[in-house]
Length: 109
Image 1 (cartoon, helix red, strand yellow):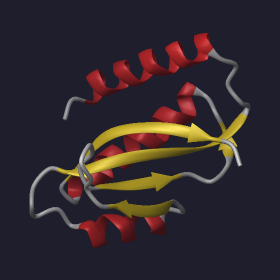
Image 2 (cartoon, rainbow, N blue to C red):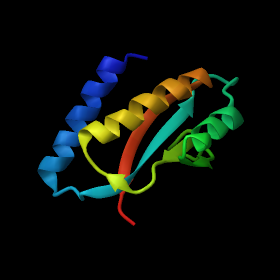
Image 3 (cartoon, rainbow, N blue to C red):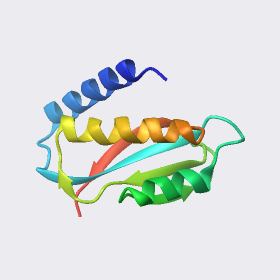
Image 4 (cartoon, rainbow, N blue to C red):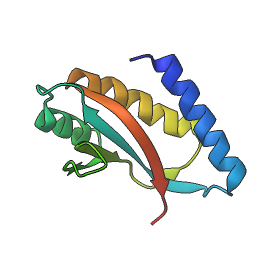
């Protein structure tokens, strides 16, 4: 895991999206994580994220995607700084439980 590289990619994608469309002032941000090994602790990661106020959902693998954990923030301000703050914290937390960051998105209610 290279957080500097991950942050640079997040910054680039966020800038590209903001150039293509007007971003909402507030949104929920969701982050996807995939197990790095068969020993990943799905329950532990879920409990740790929920204890920090996040909503967690699991998705089974299908023809196109791996099984993943999706962690969603509450509605709040949307900015690169806010997004990266959550992403960095959750990436480090996920690593403890055997998960790697696999993407993010945002939506308004």
